[in-house]
Structure formats: structure tokens, C-alpha cells
Image 1 (cartoon, protein in one colour):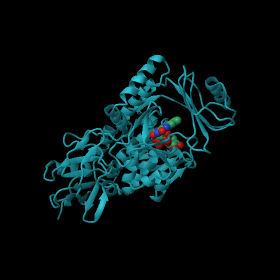
Image 2: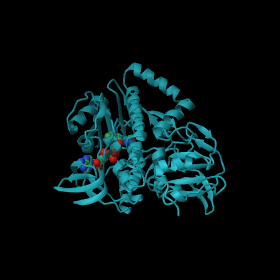
Image 3: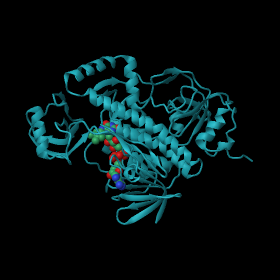
Length: 489
Ligand SMILES: Cc1cc2nc3c(=O)[nH]c(=O)nc-3n(C[C@H](O)[C@H](O)[C@H](O)COP(=O)(O)OP(=O)(O)OC[C@H]3O[C@@H](n4cnc5c(N)ncnc54)[C@H](O)[C@@H]3O)c2cc1C
């Protein structure tokens, strides 16, 4: 039986990001992916939000995505446009890029990092014991791992086999989605009627036309047929616009569920395996990638015995509330999109509210992931929040905070007089950087905050501690997040 430290079930966006994070930390990881190639049927996610682009920037690969997509300065809350060009981030926009391209770019990076990807194979079962997990694969083979992570999507076998409940709401609405060719020019844009909102669009000339139609019934079995698609088009638009063919027809619903626990012993869940919700606001893929970045360094530290197993519990503690909030806002977005007059009145009211700066910033920061705040205790407002990508001056020349995070290792950033702290007991894990920053500190929603003299930045870019280097909490924070001090001889 082949042994690996970590087996990842599922090589979609979440599994790929997690594999990369573990590989950067030197962990022996393997992906098991059911699909024979990275090719994806249909379009699914349509882009990346600010915080995800920042996270990719923290690893030095944001440019690969930016070069392939298109920037839009507004994001949508149930179709209400929210401008984010005034947000204090280098990435104050949405990057329009189809999931197939996002996965291809991530898969190339994972390949460069040397992670084996067992494609065309499936995890069909597992059994965990005190020291590891036996992972059963299709084709009558198995793997042994210290940890198994289910990144295997909404119907996750790992979640079901681990006995983790997936609680929430059954669907109330179903949508048909297709990529089609039509002889006639359709009516592009949104159309609202008594059934709901329908949309026809095409991002670029030469691309297939994308159709999303609200269905009259919720209960269905399987994907729709061409006949059903034609019928649905005629019911909404009075014509099928000379529908010639469809490269892909599927349906999705507003089912909204979350795993009650993201961990069961040596088995963890991330991405759609841990949370499903409708695509309003475009948050699913983004949340999964950010789950992976939260989990990766923690799992690496537990595997290489830098930290005790308990560090893994902070993954659930931090990411479950973030997932719950996403579920909650998608429920609100679905409700706002209901077609009757009373919901339209509510929608008009929300549109008015969101034209004001404070509500707009608040909702947009939530959708873009820029306001995520892990509860790491009292202290400086940055504690638990994302570290802004400041321009820094160091003895080696100018740099940026995100550049310091490319290798996914923690950084103690000293912005005061050098020499105020002895990092030797953690020097094999934490990099001390002496730097200077001239300028104000702006955070999304909060606005300007006081510049702290020093910060401890986790590999996921969140601030674990901020304060004066003489603060007795600093050694404690180093030990909590990056393991006990090593005796220095
Ligand atoms: C119509 C639509 C539009 C969307 N739009 C957006 C958007 O704009 N923005 C956004 O952020 N999100 C969007 N999403 C959501 C997004 O597509 C998902 O959240 C995202 O794909 C989740 O990634 P994942 O890697 O967690 O899971 P998945 O992408 O589902 O990947 C799971 C992988 O696991 C593999 N697998 C499954 N079972 C096994 C097994 N037993 N063994 C091995 N492999 C297995 C599958 O083949 C798959 O590759 C949209 C979704 C839909 C349906």
C-alpha cells in the first residue's frame, strides 16, 4: 500500500489549492480525482473576488489569472451592482474568468510544485484508526495517509462516509443552465416575469451563448433534455431563437446546506464538500479556495509535528462561521430575487440602501471576502483580519507584504527599531523581517487604523498578533500558532 502524509479526494479548485499549500510546506500530498482530465463540462463559476485574488497574490501567482480574465469594478448582490473601486486593496475589482480556466491555471501550478494527481480514479471508501486513514480507491487499490481531506464537492462521499451531518434548507427554486448555439440573435440581458429572473448572455464574440432560466417546478431528476430547454425558452421569450444545439445543459438549485463539523478525527472537509448554496454573488469557488488556504499551513504543521493536532480545530472554528455567513447572504439574495410585487418593493428598497456608501461597503466587503475577521481575541483591529499588502522598505530594497508570503511561511514584521526581539527559538519556522512603511493604514469597512509597531502574520495572510515587540503576548502567540520555542544553545 502506498503511503502519503495527506490524501486529497477531489482535484477541483479547492483540492488543487490545498495541494499547492501543502506542497509549499514540503508535505507529501497526493490528489485523487475522478475526472480523467482537468476539462470541465460547462462554465460554473464565472470569476474571482478580491480576497481570492489577494490570496493568489500572496503566493506570487495572481498575474497568471489576471492575464487570462477581464476586470470589472462592480460586483452584484442579487443583481444590484456594488462599485468597489474605492476599496483599499490592489485588487479592487472582480476578475471575470470561467472556472475551466481557473482550474487549468491552478492545475498547472500544482504540477510545477510536483504534486501527483491520480486522475480517472475515485475514492470509494476509507477507514480511519489512531495513526492514519486507509483510503480505498476505484480499481481495487488503496493508499495509506495520516490525513484525508474531502474536497470532493457537494455530494461528498467523504462527508457521508465520515457520518458528518449536512444540515440546512432543501431547494425552493431550480434553474436550468445551458451553453447554446442559436441561429437568431437572442435578447441579451435579464428578463423578469412571474416565474422569476432569466438571463441570456455571452461574454465575448465567438463564445457560446449562456442561458439561465428559472424553472416552474423544483423537483427534477437528472439533467434537462434539449426538448425541455426549447420548451422553457419558448415559455419565457415566446421563441427558441432558432436553437441549433447545446454543448452543455444542466440545472442547479438554491439548496443551502453546511457540514456541522469540518473535521472528524483524521478526516477533514473543504469547499463544496463542506458547504453548498446557490451561486448568487459568485462565492462558492472563492470560499473553497480560501478554506484551503486556511487549512493548508495548519495541516502541514500538524503533519510535520510543529504543532499539536488541536491546531486543526481552529480550521473549523474560523471557517465554519465564514461559510455560514455565505449561506445566509445567498438565502437573502434568492429571497430578493423573488418575482412578486412585494419582493420587488423590497428589492427597490435594498437598491436604494445599497446606493449609500456605508451599506454598499459593508455588503461588498462581505461578498469580496475582504472583511473576514477570525476571532483571535482582543487587541489591535488588525488581529484576526487580513494583512494589507503594504509597500515596505527593507535593507534589501523595496518589497511588498504579499511578496514576503510567497513561500507560505509565517512572518514577524518589525516596523520599529530593529533588534527588539530575539526570534531564535522560532527562527526555523518564522521569518523576522525589519522594514519601514510610510503611509496610512486603511482597512476595508473599518477605514484608517493606527499603525502597529510590529505584526505576526500567518501564512494565510491573517494577523495573529499586532503590538509592541516587548508585549509578553508575542511569545505566547508564536507558540500558539507556530509551535513551542526550540531551546537555543
Ligand atoms: C451555475 C453555477 C455557477 C457558479 N458560479 C460561481 C461563481 O461565479 N463564483 C464562485 O465562486 N462559485 C460559483 N459556483 C460554485 C463553484 O462552481 C463551486 O463552489 C466550486 O466548483 C467548488 O469547488 P470544489 O473544488 O470545492 O468542488 P468541485 O468543483 O465540485 O470539485 C470536486 C471534485 O471532486 C471530484 N470528485 C468527486 N467525488 C470524488 C471521489 N469520490 N473521488 C475522487 N474525486 C471525486 C470531482 O470530479 C471534482 O473534480 C457556481 C456553481 C454553479 C453550479
